[in-house]
Amino acid sequence: MSNLESEDKGVQKQNFKALLEAYQINIPQVGDVVECEVIALDKGSVRLDIAGVTVGVVRGQELFAESSEYSSLKVGDKVEATVIDSENENSEMELSFRIAGFKKAWGNMRKYSKDETIIKAKVLAANKGGLIMQVDALSGFMPVSQLSPDNYPRVSGGDKQRILEKLQELVGKEFDVKVIDADEREEKLIVSEKAVWEDSQKAVLDAFKIGDEVAGEVSALTSFGAFIKFGEGLEGLVHISEIAWKRIDHPRDVLKVGDKVKAQIIQLDKSKIYLSIKRLVDDPWKNVKDKYQVGDVVKGKVLKAEPFGLMVALDAEIHGLAHISELSDKSITNIKDDFKVNEEYDFEIVSLEPPEHRLGLRIAGVKGKKTIKKTEDKIEEKKEEPEDEKKKEIEKEIESQEDKTDDEDKKDLDEKETKE
Image (tube, rainbow, N blue to C red; front, side):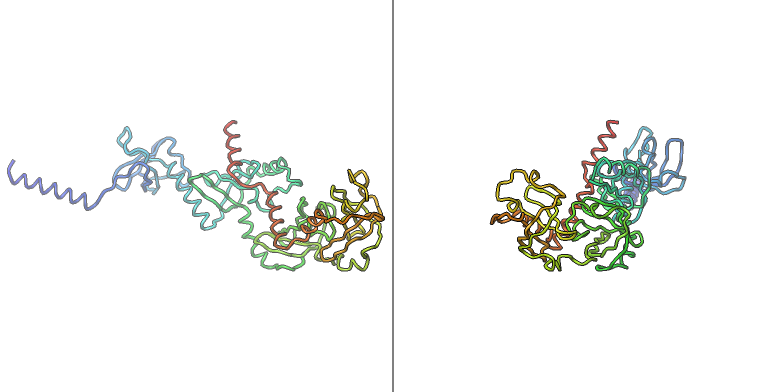
């Protein structure tokens, strides 16, 4: 070989090296998500051009993607795929739509959550905590607490079996929802129908303010209060303490589903509306001293017998407490043996505090004992607690009726499905 030929080959080698360095061709590695172009569609496989660098193939189960955009491909389509093998038995790069689609689906969920996008989701199954949802190609969860008022399962007494039965009636239905939590690492996807409902109510709620009087219909009764439907599809809660000035054990004592009532708006908290029925009528305790005085002996009907004493009605509105220490000068073993509910007895009024709605009684003729009625104080203080504390208690009671979302509920269903 001549010196001239050697020099030419050396120059060519340097030019080729410079060319490679100039274009810096990057070969995709296993795990990379790459943009490709469909160049051929064969039965059971799709061939892709990967940025002009190499040809890849998607076949078998890797064709089944998590995103609907992969379901009807044609030559020339731009798609994303994940590298699962740098070289297969045919010296082609092996790719997957399934893995890329899975990542893309989660990416979409994060975007939907950030943008508060409303999407469709289908109910696949129900468990004690909520609904298993089909969200795009992913499995999500909707807690009971995230259902709209129209679909929320109100069950007297909070019977979990009855709640589950009502949730199962929703299987197969499709809801408009928002994504409120999308954690790909934990594979945790939480959606909310209530969030969509709240948006639709904002404009309607703007027409109301605290103090407004509304007319509506009792739609449901629970141990903690009554739900009232009013206006254009709105619903508010009347807590049991806001139903009547007198003491009641359950809303059904004075209300029934279907009753037409008037109530006052006392709190607006996003989509939560709190109402009061009793505030639209005069407080009977304001003029109680015109009817009763300390020292008076009056007839009283026993409403309830508790270990600490008797709850007594002097009339339809004014109720009082006769502490056990004021029932007899002798020791009482079992209060229910000596006093019967709905029976009338003669009582002496021993204390009267209208601002606190508190009235103390003793059986007429009993000397009584100079004791501190801790139980009575505790009951009355709870009844007349400050508004902010009452609000916390109301919200806590409501939340206790709603089955909470947690991984254990989802785990229960997963285990059940595995066994089946």
